[in-house]
Amino acid sequence: MLIAVTLSGIVMVTLGASLSEQMRLSTTSQNQLIAGTLAREVVERVRATPFAELPPVGSIQEIRIASGDTKDTGVYDLSRPILARPLQIDAENFSWRHPDANYPIPLTRFPGRVTLQMGGEAQSPSGPIPETKTATVSVTWTEGAPKQLQLKAIICRYGIQMER
Amino acid sequence: MKTLFTSKSHHKKTRRSGLNVHPVRLISGFSILELLVSVVIIGIALAGISELLWANTTWLTFLQNKYDTFFAAKRFLNEFKSDMRRTAVLDLSLSDSKNLYIKKATEDQFDGYGFLTGTTDYYYGIEADTEPGRENQFLIKAGPNKLTAHTVLSGVVGPLGINDTQPKIFQFLDRKSAISDLPTEDTIMIIVNLELLRNEYGKTLRDSPQKSGLALRDEIFLRSKVIHAQ
Image 1: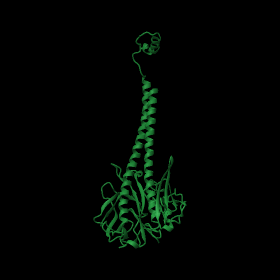
Image 2: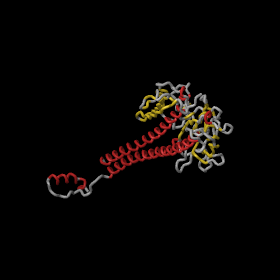
Image 3: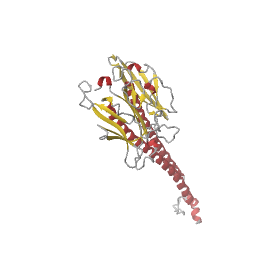
């Protein structure tokens, strides 16, 4: 009987650990997928912003993920559309399907933060590139341990952005 | 029968005395009670593992559905983005949050400097999915016009406007960063809102769990009308 108990215990612990790890991997995959999409969207948004209206060099700005969300931290700069427009879900203008009518945000709302840090001129082997800035997008979230995805881009004054 | 129960002590004795005597006990192993307890313990362990296995299968199904939906959405958005990159002008009289009539350049409508030499009419719009079992789901169609448009994305379920029964996919951002449901002369960017939920294999939409759904939002910058308008 002791052998049966021991074997069952070993099998259960091994299988349990393996299955739990798979579930964690599922969550990680999903979050990484959405994090990558959010980061690319921020870069697209930065490129579409007039050069003079980009956030100040050296500052780290938080970008809104979902408007109308009770979990919204509200720490972004509302006066800057590039930061205040929701990245994933606009719940102020739309209703989304959700089992809980009192909290109408989809279950796929990204559970993390997105920040944008503007840097000075981009550096090339021959020195700084004039009329450029660097943008670093960081997407962070927690899954047991903190996770981060970072994307960097060079923005040129004479790129595709609209001058007003 | 009595000898059977005393066989252990007898066996010890014979081993201790070094005699090669066959043990009296011929039936060895667990008692019925021990077996029952073992079976119960193994049963409990298996029940726990099975529950975990089912939970894991469900999670993997969610993930598989989300991946499937996500890549379908990204495929559509890549195609849409490619078209918008070649578009400077929208048809303002026909476009709204559910239909988009654009004038895009085809591959042979560019000069050697990347400027547009002409445009061709193109359409993006949303329509109800009429296939049985896909009630309340919508399709995004694209093509040279509404009649010949083909499906580029299925499984759209939202987002809905407050009083709408059909998803509102497009929003329009103008150069003053104002967002509206209708395009204007100042529109510089198209915002695409998508909420997707596809039927799980062998299930109807109603039985497919909401966790399989996906919400996405993308912003696509149009070409400068000042430079590229035709």
